[in-house]
Picture 1 (cartoon, one colour):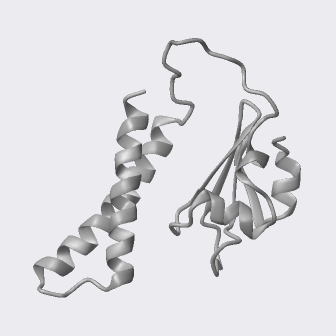
Picture 2 (cartoon, one colour; picture 1 turned 60 degrees about the vertical axis):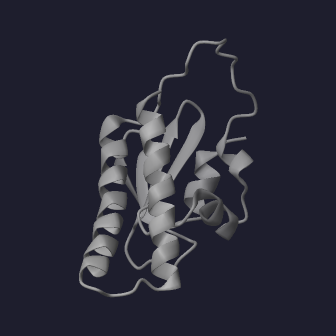
Length: 139
């Protein structure tokens, strides 16, 4: 069951940024300043690490699972498409960040620098995340 209070107490440097919104240090990487956004929306907890950590890595670092971010039951919505609950401004910020990753890699390639295995893996992750963001926009 989604319990925002348990999650927030497990994080460092938590700061409220608005109604149902917080930032905190990401527990899955060496974060010195908050890079993790937390949203409480319709009994669901939404997380995004701007350092590139996957949600399952973030929740795993504090001993939770992805199921802990969701309510016990989700109402059936029928066959109609479910509209995105992610605000457009959050989605655009996410797309901008991932596009920056792609541009940095492209700049290195154009400069004749070979991509390391880690850089190539991060470029593939950015591609996957951008593809998912496009799908979210089309909902």
